[in-house]
Every structure is written in structure tokens, then in C-alpha cells.
Amino acid sequence: MIIYAVNRILYLIPVLLILTMVVFSFVHLLPGDVIDVLAGQEGAVDPEVRKALEQEYGLDKPFYVQYGIWLNRVLHGDFGTSLVTRRPIAVEFFQRIPATLYLALIGTMISLCIAIPLGTIAAVKRNTAVDYVAQVVSLIGISIPEFWFALLSVLLFSLYLGWLPSSEYYSPFDDVWLGVKHMILPAAALGIRQAAITTRLTRSTMLDETRKEYVDTARAMGLSEPKVIYQYTLRNAMIPTLTISGLQLAQMLGGTVVIETIFAWPGVGRTLFEAIISRDFPVIQAGVLILGIAVVVINVLVDLLYRVLNPRVRLA
Image (cartoon, rainbow, N blue to C red; front, side, top):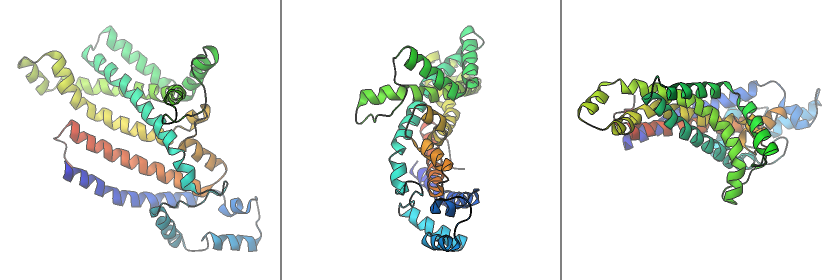
């Protein structure tokens, strides 16, 4: 297990290096001129002003030199300064990462708590009313856009019933009750749709596992049906579910812009969206890099969980 973990972690080095190259190149290909943003004006900028700004920010240097300088800063935790707020980018993001991480983790937990029992029961009770209801519910969940479900939730639970707040964020470390109360609606809006996708996958993988020979052998040995299903079959069926859940978690970290906007949630996705609107290139660069690193790290953690669920997994 240790050798497997070390090998997976070592794979991160070239992947992250390529990621930095792609992110740095991608931002330089975006339309718009960073000098216009720096100068605070659109259109033609005075040549002397342009030259001074290029020298100050190192934009007059060759591309590979700019990349080397930027990478060196990143390795030392310096992502530069926002062109709009003039604040350190690291401060901008690391103040908002906890809110997004909190929302994404709770959304994923809601998804798994719904999908695993529902998908397992649907597979065990296949071709029955329970199975049909689970499939219809999951299909409806997949078909409903997150933003529409979020707006309906605000309309019903906040406006009409007044049970839950529709906006703001409170850290659970500052006030547990307020943190949970303000988290329920945005996390549910994220998690329920993801649960619909994961339910169908869990049902499918469970059906595949129940047809395998080891299941027939376990039943022939006289093991009880609950033990066969929940101790053996479900454990093997969880590997694809973990994969999709890991990808969903990574997607939530950077793909919650709409949800964060609807619920006024001060997260990374909303920050990145605001940076794109204002053409704050250094913030865009840092945000995409941070989210890319999060995706890579989550995938490695999922790989390590494979070995916990199934020790037969080997490094390919």
C-alpha cells in the first residue's frame, strides 16, 4: 500500500508541471490586453505608459522567461496581485476556499447518502415497483437543471415557508447552527442532482456484480443475503461510484458559479467568475491552477481509496 501511494504521489510531479504550462499558456491566449486593465482604460494606451507597465510586470520578457518567473513565485506561494482589488491573490482565494470546500464536501455527502442506498435497493429489487420508482426519480433528478432546482428551493423553503435562509455564508467553526442552516439549500441543490447520476451508476454496477461467480459461491456456502450484498457485492460495486463521486467533487469545487451566485456564497467559483468579467488575468490564472491542482489531488485520493476497497488493485 505504501509503495502504491508513493508511486501515485510521484506521478503528480510531471502532471502538475504540465498543468502549470497549460494554465500559463491558456491565460496568455485569452482575448483582451492586460495592459488595458493595468492602465485602467480601454483602447489605445500611451506608448510610454505601455512600455513602463510591461517593464514593471515583466511583460517585455520572452514567454518562457515569464513562465519561469511565474512558476518560481507559485512554488513559493506567491500568485501575484489582483489587477482590480490590488490585493494578494493568495489572500483572495484562500479566504474563499473553505466556503467552496465546505459546500462541495457536504454536497457530495448528500449525494452519496442518497445514491448508495437507493441504487443498491433498486438493484436488489430489480424489475419491481421499487426499482422502477428509483429509476424514474433518478431520471427526473438528472433532467432538472441545478439552477432551476436552486431557485425553486429558495422560492419554497425561504420565501413561502420561511424555514431556511436563502443567502449568506457562516463558517461552522464560528457558529455550527448558523453554518448548517445556511448550508442546507445550496448543498442540497448541488447534491441531489449528483445523487441522481450516482444512483443510476450504483444500480448498474450492483447488477453487474450480482451476476458474478463469487456471489453465487457465497450464496452456495450458506451466507445470508444481506451479508452477500452489503459485505461483498456492494464493496466491489463502490469502485465506479467512488470514481464518479471524486470527479463530481472536483467539478463542484470549480463548477458552482451559478449556485454560489444564487445563494450569495463567497466561494472560489464566484471569485473566478468575477475575475473573468473584470479581465483580472492573474486571478484567472491562479484560480484555474488551484482548481486544476484540486482535481489532480482528488483523483489521487480516489486511487488510494481503491486499494482500501479492493486490495487487488495494482498500479498500472
